[in-house]
Image 1 (spheres, rainbow, N blue to C red):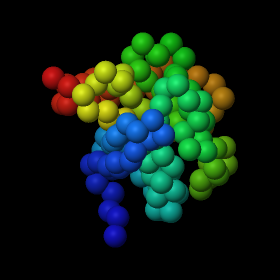
Image 2: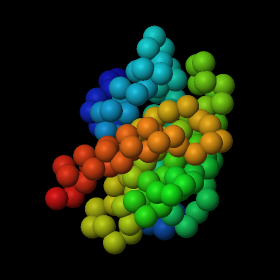
Image 3: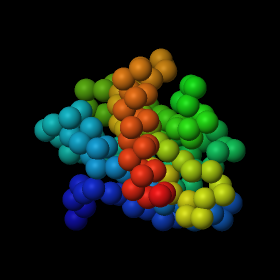
Image 4: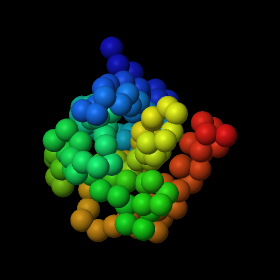
Length: 145
């Protein structure tokens, strides 16, 4: 039985044969609990979609059947968004996961889920950008230094 924990790991071979790991910061679990305080099902559906990032490649416009995009102005920091348009709970437009993807030169290729929020055609707000940057700094400090 799956229990939400501080990290969600998935290993898979992508189309290019690159082993990729998907990990969430515990803050993403807390984001989802705030978005869906009573209902676990949308959290599990979102988790299932986020694990598709195990086949992520920055040269492809799709991850499985989902779109992704670089966060405007944050490409240099390698922050991107996975767009999950499936209606989940009260969010008919879906959700998005802000993730950090180190470049291909990284010894261990890990895609980090940083922030879950409702899907919007607008770019991230200043607050959301700062939260994503701070969470990226946490990942960099804990796992890359």
